[in-house]
Length: 365
Image 1: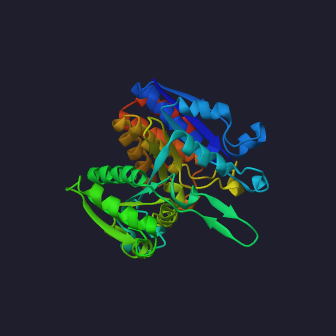
Image 2: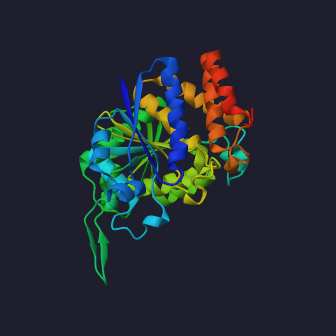
Image 3: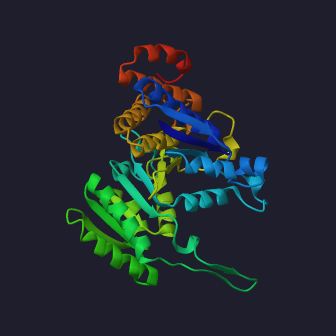
């Protein structure tokens, strides 16, 4: 039995996570994966209901889970709160020891025109950012007064070594190219980063390693994105570069992410935010959440199901069923239903197709 905790969160989170969870449930039923699902408050809704973005019951459920699927957190209604919804996410990552954040971004064939880059520049771009998630300036000691502010930006050898191994292993499964991004010409922490990554690289002679300063990497991502395969970098640089990378495929709504660590549990979520302006309108793009569910399946050991879900997602887009951000008119629920129909088609479950046809009427095929 595989225990999956759903954290719908805020804004469009419940809508997109709901569609992804239905895809997982269909795969569980039709493929005998034996998933169990439970939903818990997290983020702003948890502040409203429990006074904290990460209630003890939610944390306990996450600790006992095999995987966590998160929708989105945050919204302007909590701007004045003593603790913002996003604080719950930082606490959850720290509590579960989730030190590695993986953000893949690939330009899907036929959607090159949606990229802000020239189509010929964006075509075939396929990049994975491996971001260190629990160190650096975000977690260093902080000092703030009326006249002074500081954030300690520190890394240990152990922190760099463990994220480097994650990145090299990922590169081995792809095209065996890894770019380490730092600012070693200025920052002491980056000098350590570059030295340790190079040392770890000796254990991976089949992976080609190169180093770039973060400013050069930011420029190259938008001028020559195909030059990259896997990028590994520290927390703040990874936060910035992965958000830059998110626009290249044409919509942030397409992108997934995974946060993992030494423990079995992983956290999977779309890259986009809570988009409160469209919450409840059934117009959000659930593709990022569904792609995150595919990463979840791979994490818990069901690689065939992960490939089936990812293929069904791309088939849906290729067949013309697209939400507004992709130039279409499919609703969130219609898009999710279309993906599930294609799961059924790929698995040869004609009975499932018949059950799902009614859900899919009015969608783009």
